[in-house]
Length: 451
Image (cartoon, rainbow, N blue to C red):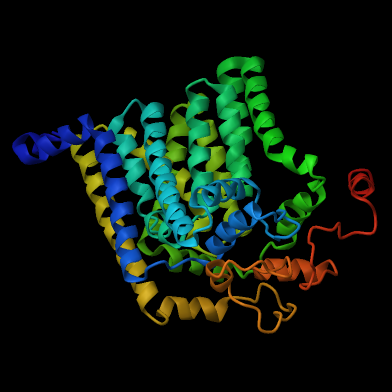
């Protein structure tokens, strides 16, 4: 009889009952403890380490408090909300860059914990099964950067995850306006978060008809208006569009398909099995109940497609991994035998440990055989780039010394350099964000919409 062994082993039966009854406490405790302990341990090993991207976000937040203009004095691809956050943190830290960095780590840890927890709650609501929610949350921990990267500072992808999952949760709980607001905030932190918006509108239409869809759209427009309003008032809409819309289109990566597939194994190691498991979970859920779960498959396929457009590091697939984790949670919800459900939890714990070990090897080993094979097959994304300005300081130096750079191109990412090269720009510009085409923006757009 399925699950009979649980009744013959009181310890296992007690563990199973405890996980079912207290899944939320177990999930929150596990995610919080793991993320906090790993962050503290890494911080103690290399105190005040800061990732170069985080250095830009945090430095820009401080510089904005000193009068700098985003997308004019500071060139970047990311949407504005991460800079709203770092500006507020800079105000609180009153010019102390060490305190700003610590605060940035704290809020990023919080975003990671909340995002994973909300994913578990979302699955629990969808399946009316707390253990399925626990499984979905634990699956997210297979992606090591979820808990190992916050030590480097603030990163917008954690906040996009948090807002995206919260928007979907509010949508299925039939709060379309709030879902629209929070879902739009996901895109305000990171462009791929925009896929949440049509899902939220679709769920609103399904649950509340045209009124529900209209309220979701209204919430999204309200958030968008609040985000864009400062740029309208300061006359900097063109720089906003140039850097956050046009520049990412130029920066789409070239790659060889076999190399990109290898990269998936390099970055995720044994954790790569979560993707096929998630797809299987979507498929079963949609076949069994299409009206409830259609958006899970649509969102999952949409974010998996992002694999073909941008994949520099594992964190770039965080939303795809979230949907895959959602699929694993749905799969757990369809397992009726207690022994299989408990075995799935055990396998996930092993997979979390194995993925952490894999990531540790990547960090400590010069080059693994798999990495060497990937390097052999990979192609150069950008065959030619303008030379870096001679003697230009690193982002870490700019951050810790609170420099006010002479040129707006001071992060010097490859996409930034490529965009400047392809549009005839220069890395020595005092002000960024100029419209790069001969036609004015309105005429340029009209010519492309109307052949």
